[in-house]
Image 1 (cartoon, rainbow, N blue to C red):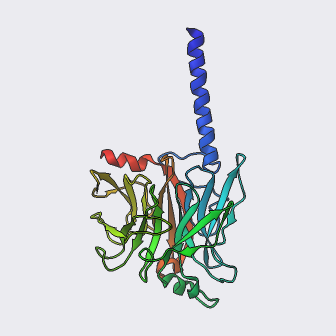
Image 2 (cartoon, one colour):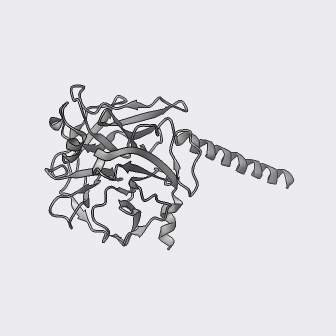
Image 3 (cartoon, rainbow, N blue to C red):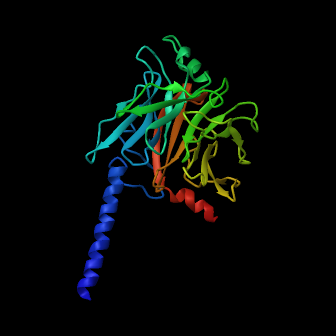
Length: 312
């Protein structure tokens, strides 16, 4: 009996140790956070530059985030190879002839081979364009495919997803459909959340506005692969809506310690649903939008801050 108990205890401790080890490796060798947000991967991901929107592929073998480099938004990544993360490298989404570019807010399909992101038509770039002018150009949704282990140059997702209006922050769900933000005129007003049903061969049905009875102009919205819950950013921080009987419920504020001088955005849940990632940025109060941003950081926290809201 004594040997049996000792064996069971040893098994439990070994399993717990291996679980923590896997956790740390999967999350870029970081010690997992508690219910207090902590900055993610300082020095590697978070630097003196402006960073935003960390995401992982489903198998935890590739990590992505965006960084502003020489006035351009550039997607970076690292791959888990033989148990170690490779050095951070940028992904070239446009030809080298493009002087200034916008590629940010990546989302990865479940198979890990397709990336959608927010982009701006390269025809609008020039060496003389100012940041303020660049950020006023309506963005679209772009797509890149991973072939033979390399991400290819991106192309615009055509209508009815990308239009002459504002489209941003795409999120790919389990059946390859897309959620995104748009200010197209057939919505409820302001910037709404839309869902575009995936058909085949990169084509989508006409997007449908998702009514959440929440604050207008949500900057970014995350939806989990099974479409059970939705996390949206707002001027007050984040709010979460759970789906019940096929309908999105009234959003509930996510309780965290927010700094009123920073703007919170880019909500994202880790594929194992253990941790909630988000970005925040600080701007010069006298300037609007990204033109005045001087600092951008990525944080993570226990997913309990999201799921505990369901019981309230």
